[in-house]
Amino acid sequence: MSKKQNNNQLQKPRQEFIFQKKNYLFMFIGLALISLGFILMSGGGSDDPNVFNPEIYNFRRIRLAPTLVLIGLGIEVYAILLNPHKKK
Image 1 (tube, rainbow, N blue to C red):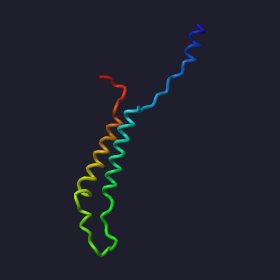
Image 2 (image 1 turned 60 degrees about the vertical axis):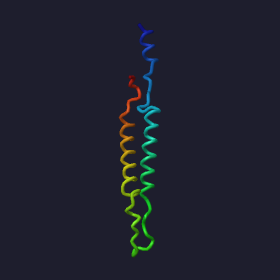
Image 3 (image 1 turned 90 degrees about the vertical axis):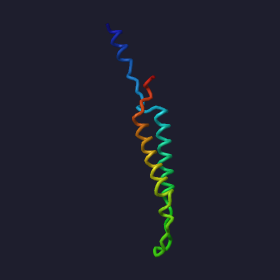
Image 4 (image 1 turned 45 degrees about the horizontal axis):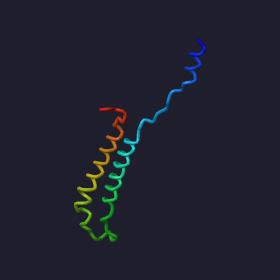
């Protein structure tokens, strides 16, 4: 009887990370897209506050950059919800 108890005491629960390599890969891709979107949004201003620069309203800053940020956020949510242990 004491041998069984000793075996149970020696076996420690195996600690496992919540996220696996696949989760971190998707998180990195999402973070890269979010960063790229914010980089594309920057600029377009004018050094002189009395001069209007219409470049602030171009396609890159109004459509492309926010779309990349939203896609990156969607990938981040997917990476968090992804279950790498699920087998098909």
